[in-house]
Image (cartoon, rainbow, N blue to C red; front, top):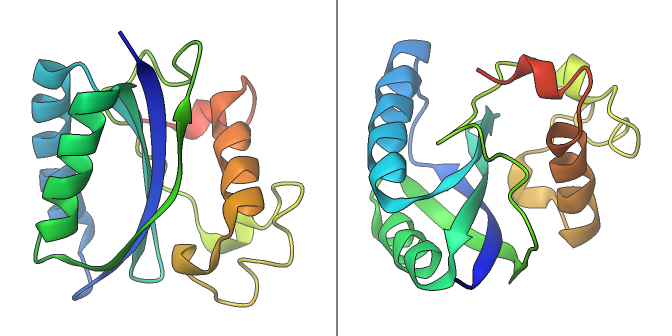
Length: 145
């Protein structure tokens, strides 16, 4: 199996309520479990940051489906690269509910979220910083649901 992670960001076409996000998350978890996909989904300022982990062909196909989803616009693949092991193996899709002021406490991102920027403004370096903050054990990891 060619294990990869794909990090992408997108803007939403509209605001999502917490209830709508929960429905989306439940759908993602069900489909991801069947497809052997794990990862994390963040939502902030009408934008998504998502990490998809799994076999290359499955991750590529899922990314294409997401790219065509009318709930997204400006879908941007930030990173796709091989990985030796999954960072989110216990989650079909982790979903932390963290306000921007809390995200700003992640080392390396302190100036990013305070300015009201969206995930679309993340570059590769900050995307990896955010990934590492949630992939490692500790405060941010325990916020995943």
